[in-house]
Amino acid sequence: MFLVLNSLTNVSCPLGRQACQQRLASQYLWIAGIRPVFPYKTFLACVGLFVLLAVTPSHGWKSASTHLKEIINHYDAIETQSIDLVQWKTHTNDQGSVSWNTSYLLSSYVDMYEVTSNRKYLDKFVELANPLVDGTDANRGLADYKGRKRIGWGSVAYSEKGQRVIWLVHTGMITYPLLRFAYVVIRNHKVRDLLTTARKYQSVSESALGEFDGQWRYDPKDAEGFYLFESDQPLDNGVAGPDLPQPLNMQLAAGRSFLILAKITSNQDYLQKAHGLAKLLRSRLVREGSGGYSWTYWFGKGLSRSSVLEDVSHGAIDVEFAVLAEQNSIVFTPDDLKPFVATFLDRWGRAQSSMATGVGKGTAEFKAGERNALDRWAPLSEVSCRVYDVLYADLMARIGRQDAQVLLGIAQLATYARKCAAASLLAKRSVSPYLRLAQTNGFKVLGEASAVGRPLRSRQATGIRSHLAILHPFFC
Image (tube, rainbow, N blue to C red):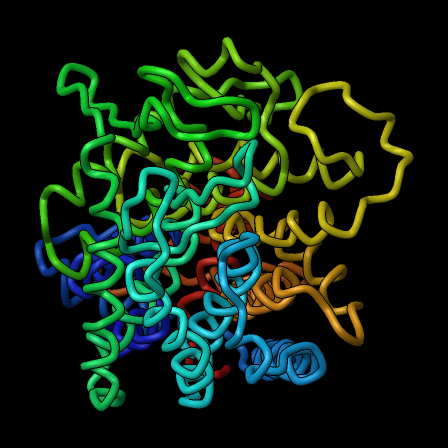
């Protein structure tokens, strides 16, 4: 069993190794219907898991492995056609290019390394990230609208009069892949030669996020936290004014970074920020009649500026934050994520960019940017392989030069390929050969005709097949 769990946690585990192994073991045993009935529970759990592994046929798993290889090859082909790192290294954030383009490419390199353990993706990351980390406004000698030379990546594109502003959302978008890189390297002795680089990325990221500490507000009563704009910060229409909270996606872009920093450092301040922002998002989600969520771009005092509902591009940031929070047992549960899946499937089917119920008739084609933005909802494959299936069909059909969002979407597909491709293969097969096991040595595995005395429902059988798929890494 521990070989199985180690294999899983070596692939990608957002929790600590021990916590992840414990969580996996308990979930898979109970979902598969395993019921220990006498005291030697640990021994029997191991026996039961290996029995399940032994009776699962291996020929379908070759197909799952091939499926993953096809995604990796597809990523490499599009990346080769789309990305010239010599040119990309010259990008600055003056017009927002780094935050809304380079950041996606950097994250895709981390995803691909985590899936393949191929060093080339980390080397590409470093080649692109080094000039970015060295190119903060402070290092470039650039002052913001108040004359401050700050650690961050300012832009003149989003203020009414072209004033230079370092935005929290941009800082979050840029530091997130830098910190993901740092987290991967710090935990992996095989790339220890990159440790100094990783620590540098971590240090710059912490300093950049720290520039906003004075704007953080936390209410211990409801455990919610959020960031305000500085009262004189230029916006696209005037200045912020006093006590204006930043839009949700701006907060949560930084929230993802705090989640990774909490894991790297065990700093409780970072954990409090991540938890407070998760509470903030969770309390702002509204269930729709379709079963999905809607939520507004602004909240609180910001609703007086606009009550427009969130769009799919900024919403992708919110969704990824929610998935990260759930993976780390912060506020969100798997059940909390499932309405996001309903929202995704509804919006994909209706081909619309707004979260608003009833907007559009479902006949218009996606604009390219909106379609690519929905590709960034792939992390919802954590709780539903239906998301994976929809995006697989879309992304694997892409050819030629593509946006960095597409590369990120393909890389995120690769992250869930073994789980979802294998589950899809097994779902097409009968459940009987896997689960019709007798009670042996006091260890009961429930067959298809008995689930605590009730017939095994189709949904339960599918869930068991899915979890058997996850537990079978050796045939991939």
